[in-house]
Length: 110
Ligand SMILES: [Mg+2]
Image (cartoon, rainbow, N blue to C red; front, side):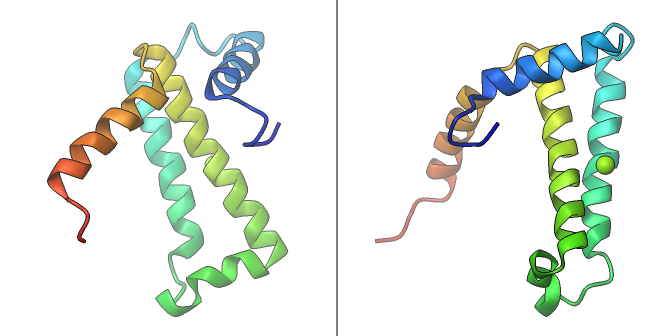
């Protein structure tokens, strides 16, 4: 899978199939999913916790840190997809709608 060849719907299906094969979806509720998302976001933040702001971009130059960054980004996206499925949210439409709200709130200059 790559961003160029995979739709969000395909990723959601991939995650659903993986979760169903392990019996996870039937036992996880919205609270569990939000807690998991929060923990994964914290794991992402932990990568940068003691880095000076000037060195935050250096994560990409370290193969192990970069691998860890990609894993935590995937974990965060995983639970976003699970929550979208749980609440029947079309993520692309939600992003489009929120972008319109943000455009009104923060108009581009010039
Ligand atoms: Mg994680």
